[in-house]
Image (spheres, rainbow, N blue to C red):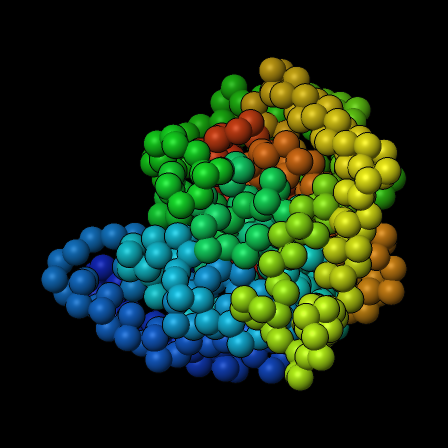
Length: 479
Ligand code: GLN
């Protein structure tokens, strides 16, 4: 039997419930497929074959016993930033190359309880720092549409259906560049317990799926208050699937003026405008909206995120856990060599920048100023949401670029994040949906909404996907 991999979670779940396929069969097919493509794509850091087949057997037993549940027996993958008890969690780093967490992340625990089967842990930029998935200690991930190109980052290995994280775009960028759907929920909507910290005021767990409908199913299982994460929000979790099909009549869409700038590939702009025509036909109205402080997102983020990372990554000292250098001479040597050998170049760059902007004498000029600009950007969004229900723009300025094209120049790499970072700085939910191709490479449309507007974002994305099939296209050789 072939072709199951092309199905959405919703379709797989229907087949599992009616018994036309078992979870063990599906899991076996997915594992075979991972083995087939791993050499070319390097999407996985660990494949947890034995555990997966065991979980699949358990899921089949639950189904046979008549249990119902949208994720029972459905194979998924976890970004290797989420702790998994008994399986290693590397965060793409030599620092954690042999780290086995004694506990599960809340997200992992919830998805397991919902019956999802974990296939393995996906490759990513080291400590989620990057926009191309090239900085992994385990080698770069490649784009299935063209293996000479990057899949986007940092969740470059996560593909449908999979968990991921987004600090400045790491869910939405790979979604756009690989032609899948990626949802970054509101800050606080999904527990970060057991998710390796990069920049704590920006990090948010979320997901990559084929469709918005699948995103609704996964989010429902992942979201909710967790007493082990003080930043998780105590708000009820709505039924994300219930509002998917709601008509768009009366929806007010704001076109993000600052996103349709000089840096945007004109062909991507055209794809977005075509998609907007579809939404208009569905009954939405469009107007231009300007967020004057938004162009300051990149410099603001690249002060705030490194500052927080320099403090979060201080815990990797060669003493408590993680990589330890051979034969340290004394304590200082232990710290220096463990960190020097355990971290890659980009992580070190971030730690140095972060330490600098937080140091006495520079704190006010950099960190404090960045925090002020961040408040202005949040206020811009809040103002815009008085006028419109959602904001739309591109997810990335260009389609996937070639491996190595930007690794020599960090600033060029950082500029990929120009359209995604704003939502993180303001803590807003945002979704990227495939909206066409540019020279054979997929591109994405980004929809941003007010805090906790996930039902609305999923609704707009779903209605668009009912009228388009970009999200169902597969790369040549992957059909
Ligand atoms: N590209 C951004 C960075 O390098 C965002 C990464 C992320 O969202 N984890 O920091």
